[in-house]
Amino acid sequence: MVGSIANAHSNFSLLNVNGGSLEEKVDEIRKLIGKVEGDPLRIVGVGAGAWGSVFIAMLQEAYGSLREKVLIRIWRRPGRAVDRPTAEHLFKVINSREDVLRRLIRRCAYLKYVEARLGDRTLHADEILKDGFCLNMIDTPLCPLKVVTNLQEAVWDADIVINGLPSTETLEVFEEISKYWKERITSPVIVSLAKGVEAELGTEPRIITPTLMINRATGVPLENILYLGGPNIASEIYNKEYANARICGAEKWRKPLAKFLRQPHFIVWDNGDLVTHEIMGGLKNVYAIGAGMVAALTNESATSKSVYFAHCTSEMIFITHLLAEEPEKLAGPLLADTYVTLLKGRNAWYGQKLAKGELNLEMGDSIKGKGMIQGVSAVRAFYELLSHSSLNVLNPEENKHVAPVELCPILKMLYRIMIIREYPAQAILQALRDETTNDPRDRIEIAQSHVFYRPSLLGHTI
Image (cartoon, rainbow, N blue to C red):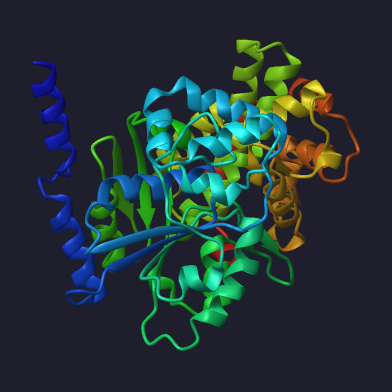
């Protein structure tokens, strides 16, 4: 009986929810890209953080057996040493998982982890990733991966590139990649997982997203660059907790890619509004840091966290009215992504550690075992953008025009705490307890009752 259930699950995993086999899904993408028989589809992950590694590992598990039709690899920088405490913890993880232990023994790879545990050998991040261990997610072993440390070797012939880099590193790496694509006749398809934004200030300020950075750096047309995001925790998705995401971009690619990426436990929808969804993915990271601070400072008070949630969601709704012509369409995706990030995301974790004094701002925003905390740069970007005088909006209570950031007290306080370091983390509670603070509903009513949409922020013209 158990065997029958396992076989049924195995057979089901070979089918997508629309009834097509994995091979049929590969063939559809191969045909769209123009691959000929004998020339495998090459999928390359760039960046090996938690989500980037999990994403490539899911593709490897789904399609890795179809070697004649698809090849999957991941690039990460070489040379990152695994310190002794991490090696000791990794050894415990290996020995707690019989399947992982047996796999390493079969691959003759177990001994090096014994030597690292004893301090007789230094492991490196790219080395352990080949065995399925992501340095930012040691407790969740992945399947073995094909790891390449030479960027040119990794990307020069890629058909589909998965950008798993933080937004703060995307431009630099893709500028280097562009050197290796100069002789290409056709452009690759790029799916960006990055949730972060940068600000471009000038007479008309605008938000720069990772997809735009990639377009500027490589010249790959925007119709070939997509964004995938959703309320996802990497380790939970790899452990097959039910999840969903949206892939956003041009219809030519987003619909077949949604079908290709979809798995029984990971449902992928498609949407044409790339830039706005991408920006919202960065915005929720800002408020997740504050949520972590409030949780730590109030001893996980449910009441205090709900007060914070009311204020931060009203600010996010206010900001979406500046960025989207039809902001109500973003309410579900934005709130879902915000909810999971506040519950278990690395940005909320970072806020908690700052408030408890276990981390400090001098350590920077790249944290051992967690990777890049993208909410830090997003705080600066959104504050600087929304402080620009060209975006002034009417504050009906004072009957005068003010910069939008003046109506976002939490964003202002996070900037003062984290960027200019004017206040300690405890000051986030002042933003909630200020007696002059308006009802969060008032902020939403201001946004809904005035024409706020600023298409220039996204580089659009009316």
